[in-house]
Length: 226
Ligand SMILES: Nc1ncnc2c1ncn2[C@@H]1O[C@H](COP(=O)(O)OP(=O)(O)O)[C@@H](O)[C@H]1O
Ligand SMILES: [Mg+2]
Image (cartoon, rainbow, N blue to C red):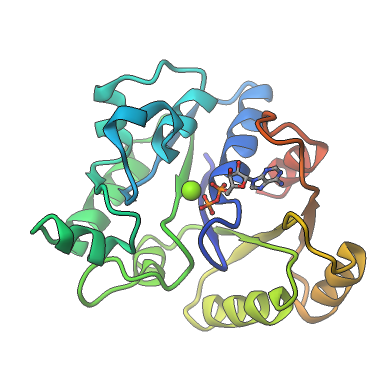
């Protein structure tokens, strides 16, 4: 009964894209997949279908309804800021303990597979004192780390891996999602990452055509490694 937390070295790197591909690949294997985007900032209710929660729900094959959005992403904020700042803009605050409790409950009650998409990068602030990393530690589930292929990604990715290991988290796989317009040779970046990543599997997801569905052999490989 798979549970995976999809995190990233930063924001806009490809968490939602990779999560959707993973969900589709799991479903292709006949698995029942539930999804969770515990905290979502930058959420515009008028564009619910294109929101992270909406895209994750659609990837499971379910219809995107306001009820499902509320269920999958209970903490939603309009400002495209880190969660604690987005909450502040609305005069609200996030109770990290409540987020952890909700995630634990969903993990315990899952029917089969559960894909949780994180918020921002691994240390994006969640509430006033905790980061997403603290949430991942509290849940203790395996992490898929999404990275880019831009100049600098090797350091960002190795830093993330080091922190995750120090906090006792298992990184099942790193997925390098090709950064658009990057002039850095992808294969050299990946081989360097593999050399330093000390046995953590590194998969490569090329840049797929814009608006395409995340469908690629790499997602089957990712499922096989879960
Ligand atoms: N490998 C890829 N091929 C094509 N588009 C991608 C790929 N990775 C990410 N994207 C696109 O890049 C944008 C940012 O990715 P997204 O998954 O939303 O990042 P995150 O969830 O980490 O913020 C989205 O428009 C997404 O569809
Ligand atoms: Mg996302």
